[in-house]
Amino acid sequence: MLEDLCGDLIAAKQTMAFAKNEVLRIEKLILDLAPPKLEGSQTLHPTGFKLTITSKLSRKLDYDTYQALDIPDSMQFVTLEPSIDLTKLRLIEQLEPVLVAQCVTTKPAKTGIKVEVSDES
Picture 1 (cartoon, rainbow, N blue to C red):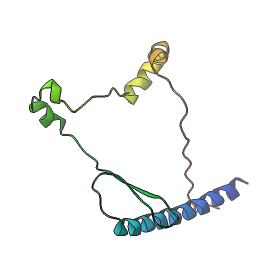
Picture 2 (picture 1 turned 135 degrees about the vertical axis):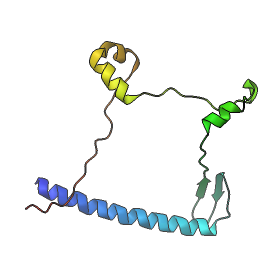
Picture 3 (picture 1 turned 30 degrees about the vertical axis):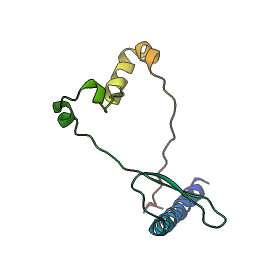
Picture 4 (picture 1 turned 90 degrees about the vertical axis):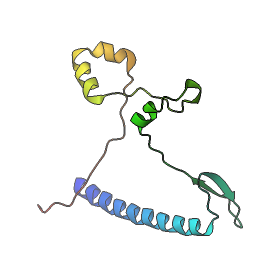
């Protein structure tokens, strides 16, 4: 039973990989035909369809340079969000679980499953 499911999962992932590549190929063809836009959304209406294309830019901040610019508060464009240091969190969870429970909500995330074909039979 488990062997069958492992084989089915591998086959499904191969099908998904093919489908993903096909989606990427078709998306590229659509983008080749659509008017270019650097950033933002545009909606096109080919016969029988509503097509929305959203173009994005990724940006990376050189924080040291940003700080050195000494920009006035009214022109600041960077906000710093608190984030969890997972290594420290796990340590503190062992030492002071009540403290962590007061300020951190933990819930299960999706479990990963990896199947590989083994040489062993």
